[in-house]
Image (cartoon, rainbow over all chains, first blue to last red; front, side, top):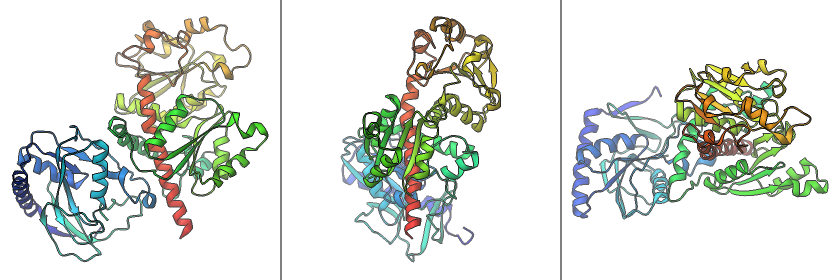
Length: 187
Length: 329
């Protein structure tokens, strides 16, 4: 943990969120979507979604997903000791969903989130917004809206810290099989 | 005993390998079970009441003793985790043809069962199976003799936490047949581990174990005294099937001394909750007006039982998965 370095400070992250809000606004207008439903993925995606939800002035309350029960590496890492209930307060059937996460890396988190959403119902569409779109994809998943495309080495690890102030930090990959470390959600 | 319980139930990093008894488990692991169950509570309210966590795993319900509620909630919990479930009604199966417990176990392991959920009339049966099961196979105790019923105790703790928030400061009365109750033993251990202020047991002398006070409880024989100012009342079922000889004068007299009525309930705190592990003997342990009244959380206990069992099954299967990888490496 000691060799983490700051990649971007709060004001930089906040201005990226402003840019993302603008892009989402344009996108939903282009697609003629009214009243989208925003869903954030724990933990960083929820911090981000809270700000986007407020900036866009969305009508329905924000949903949150904890994808712990949908991870594809449960058999390799065991139960996440800090799981929270997912909370989708509004039925997702026939709704246009904006799914928000902090870092898009392998795409496995988004795969899990899509599966979980479909266990709640059948949305009309899902749009993906991520703060960071980094290299290392292992699944055919791409964001519709993104704030940043950093160029990173495969062994570098970028994390959103928060919730207040927000910041992006860069570090070496942690050993994910060891209990107690924060689990790398997207590796 | 408690060291070996700990060694059998937890791996080096304090993860659950088996769940056999509350004895030997500390506050942090009990809290982790409660927190994990919290995450599962929403699953029952969805369109698709399932998560894919244990897909491809096989869970065998090994019930050597009759049960409806416990077996069905375990079955539902395993199915909501997407596991496949085998229900083995052993009393009607091979053991009556002379097969030993170990032979039954080995045969099921040969079918690549990943978990055994065991209920048995003999104390220590689940321990025995856990000691002999292959690495990678988890065992959960669903009630053994008079010894323990730890998942029932955990769903009771979950119900209490949901209603009362914190354990610290709570006064809890457990009322009735303590002597024959594996539920009471597990509850007392769990309540004390989680740090409630006072655990009381209320029972006639004939339905108390001789070592009752050594369990860390205050003993009351007078119900009106024992219930005064408590936050939680846990009524126990009279275990008629386990009673030998004349421990009770009559059910009618038992009710007049130890039955929970609205009049008695008024002695407890105004926001007290009433619990019962089921099945209720109405008119023996409690009046129907209390069982169906506003302070009763008995049916919530059943719903929470599914979330608690999902938590314990998934934690044990997760740890056993890691164990087999370590063996493989």
